[in-house]
Amino acid sequence: MSDWKKRHSVEGRRILVTGATKGIGFETCQVLADAGADIVAVGRDKKGLDEVAALVRKTGRKCLAVEADMATVEGPKYAAAEALKAFGTIDVLVNNAGVALNEPILDITLKNWDTTINVNLRAPMLLAQALVPNMIKQKMGKIINVSSQSGVMALADHGSYGASKGGLNQLNRVMTIEWAKHNIQSNTVCPTVILTPMGEMVWGKPEKGDPMKAKIPLGRFGKTTEVADLILFLSSSASDLITGQDILIDGGFTAQ
Image (tube, rainbow, N blue to C red; front, side, top):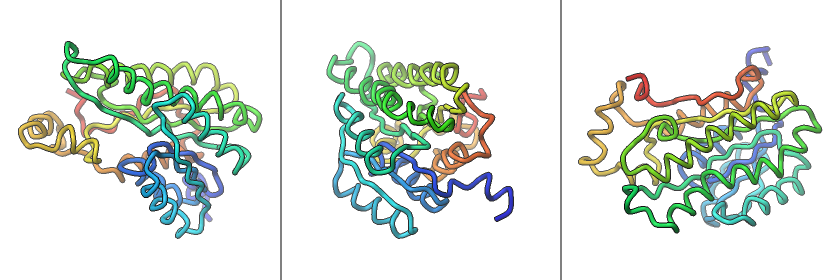
């Protein structure tokens, strides 16, 4: 294998992906396995977990499927414990699981606020607490937090979602200044609208989606593969100097 292929490979890396049963997470598991990684796929949907595990194993890579709810305190801790039991350590943590319960600030319920913060912000912190000590021991690790352009720029009806993603971006920066000395890189990926099932739910109707699309210079929403390919790059040694960044993958939305 030539040097550039080695730098962009994740051959033999053990990667945990949350929200693995659909959308960006499902695609990410496939892309990472194709590039040589063993996967811990975490999600709530047993059928979806079985599907992603089968696809990963078809590539010849190992896949541990863990049924866990990121909205709870126990879910992230259980997922991390099962991953460590199976693989000994995790080299790359992809905090992808997310929930969007969009509503005007005056209509936000405490239940929806708590669910959004718990899944989008608390779960990544709990997983990092559980997995980073082994990364420190091996003097290598990567954390990829899937955030959103809503964590960088304000969108109406995105009060709880934007707060959770903005908080995740800031948590990422603190991860960087605390753990970079241990050769751990931590970055956020901030996509525009990606037509996942969650994206379809929020933006699928033309009267809602078309005005948003018109604000994107490229004139379209994103594809799950485009985000997964960026996660692949950040999981590889080719990205070893990149840390502490909010990386926009937004078709130019934030350039305006």
